[in-house]
Length: 328
Image 1 (cartoon, rainbow, N blue to C red):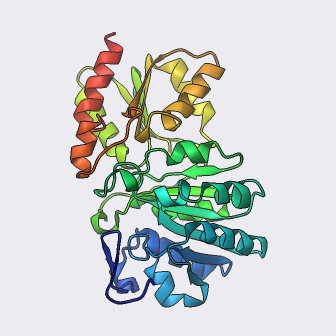
Image 2: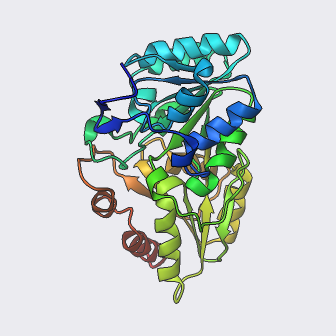
């Protein structure tokens, strides 16, 4: 069904215009294509969402390694697992909710259990979609964290996507890569950053409170740190790997800071905050602690700025939460 002309899926028109001249060097689509040029084992599978998953360049310029599975995500996972057993490194693509909820049993039984080398790429995490509850993946990290052997990576943005794609491809085993649809908003002036799976990234060093975050909430954390600067000294951590999480860094932060706050574009149940809380509890560490995210409820349709403010993920709300925690 995913043809090059006149098709629209999920509100995104698929025009087929995905030549190299239309994709930034910092986009996921270009990163995947560059990787495929360097490694013939890379194959790309899609589920009728070529444009929003940025896989048109693979379709148009590496068609022998592009497989359109149609709206059949569970089947896509099974095919990818078979390809991996034959020596390929398959990257599957759809929205986060479909990559997790819709085919969870296939992911568990055909990818996680046999530890097949499949890379599951989900787009539109959490509140980053105007399409409402049916498309808002606020539980995907919790689901994937529960699967033994599943690695979860969420780069900070376009400046870290190439590094993330290369790290994921080099990682031996299943990976869930969580990405926003961000190519149209790429800021070429932001310096490129590396990514090492399992090692959190210290972006700002302070002494009073550490904010641990990932993905689209990172700007809120950095802005909140600037708002707090006259009164509080804030560390900001880009915890781009939710699993395996950087336990050593969390232990160091807990011993050197009065408080730790997690900030995530996800439910506070089972996500990044839960992962950090587990490390603290199991190591007998007790800094003041708060989890900022969607509080055990479904969200709603709306723009990202509106939803971030409504659920307390914007910079002002984060700064207020930090103040309340430290003043408690």
